[in-house]
Length: 437
Image (cartoon, rainbow, N blue to C red; front, side, top):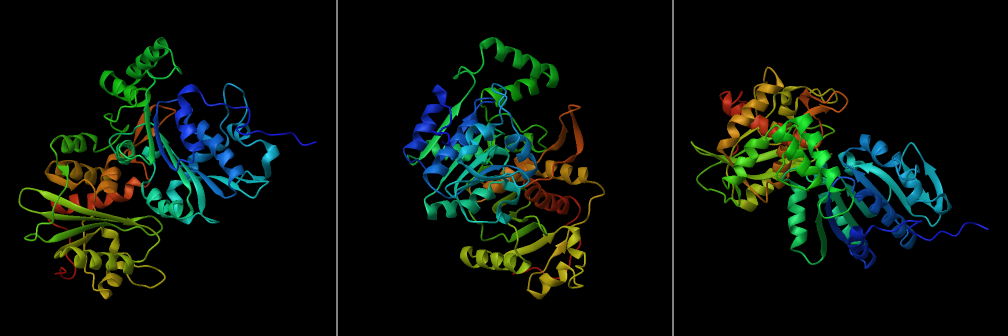
């Protein structure tokens, strides 16, 4: 006789996990949990995915910020209390049909599938559309992943759960604020002082270790982020943390109106397989007003030319300069043309920004010009998140920062902003063609 499995398999939520579990059991579709470190965020979601997969045959994803980190964080993770892999606890072999280690993929006996994936390639995932998605470490994930998946879940009645510790005042904070004021969402923030995971002595020891490693200010800030769920702490190694915090304190992140007397300039980062990003700004002698931001991947230049035309028509904009990074002049092997030439054939005329001698110069230019910048809080939300998440590489083993930025989803928006910064500090770059009017 096969073993009888009652899900969740030999697991019950801890007392502070019951509210979100009860919400999901009642049929709740949208939840965001801002929980402290070691509160069992992924554990709850793995067991809920098992229950949902058996009740509703469909496709399910557990999404990490990067596919490369998913194997260690979820697929191979072991429960230190039991010595058993997390996925084996949540998905006992009796309910599985097949397990594919390479793809981190499980097919269940009722036809449901579950897979660990990354938000860095959300739009290239193959197979049937998901019915349930867990966005783990949401504060570090590409917010465009939710924009892509949301209409799919809305159409099929599926659910989404976002779990994370804070990483500054970015898209995760905006979503949590929205959830708190929306009756159709579940939103909860739990610090280590409101659960019984750690004793007071253990928390004091954690704080002391953070301070010993990072110094008083940075150590306390990181402790408050990880254990007290503070949104005030900047992301570790973030390049523009001080400048963005100041902009928010000075109310330079707000609702902005289009100024008809000023032309709209655009600033680009040109992706090939990665995302392509565009900042839209209006500048006077004393300030730069960023009124919109656009990002997309997997599309050709014609798509972006159409986006510019649509925004011009819808908003009555008059364009000034379109500025791209220096590599717009590189010829593509497939056509023999540069993207500069291809864009001109579409009626889109670029000037190329000067190439900085080193990346640090572009970052420093961005730091210097940020105090003169204003941002539309809503339309530029994803761009602001990109600037907030843009950070130095960190060597966990040696506990030191590298000299290069992390290349992830935030790089594209940050690089496009650096195109703007370089052009403004280096005389506007090299002109090619005429400005669109």
